[in-house]
Length: 275
Ligand code: KIV
Image (cartoon, rainbow, N blue to C red):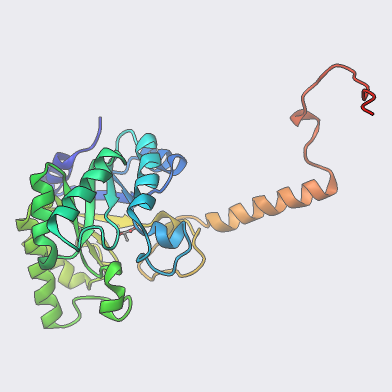
């Protein structure tokens, strides 16, 4: 059974925690899905962890659609949420609706996520009115890295907390069914989760959220650039994979791979005279 927006509402009502993980391709979507997560996010973090950019600014609609198509083929039960890339919704409300529509129509996502609170409330309302479920994203919004002056914890003073709460309320009032909240102090997050009727999905926001989301490269030790403090390493898969690649290199060089068990049998042949 596919998880839906109703799964999210029911979880908040029952006080059950929600889970969301990123995926960007078919194989990982299958792994994440079969682990039982409620939702898979095709995040624009693909700019960092898949495409090697230093931020998410350069990610395009074509990038997200391409990866969402693969994830959607692998996800049988999790709700697939596709991220709206930078400048795919900020320009105008019609632009936002059209691009959100593409993520469902071409990418086969079941919902979209976009960054911002009060300033994108009109876009969220219009997308929801087009029957496209929306996840908000407030707090640290990586697409605004240049305006924010870096990747900084948000909600550190009263003014920032006031704005965070206004953003949460605006996203909720506009019709989003959940909101990702990134990098805010745990005590502030507790109040925000109490304030909102929609589920809060935290990342770097402490335990008082209705759910948690992580980028799987971070939790598996696959991304060696930077390890955010809020991530728990569930495996050192990067080391494991490098070891396996190294064994392949060594065994090929020594003539140990392939072995007889990896070879096909055929008839005795001689090399025909070719010239
Ligand atoms: O792009 C992404 O992976 C995200 C998560 C950090 C929530 O937006």
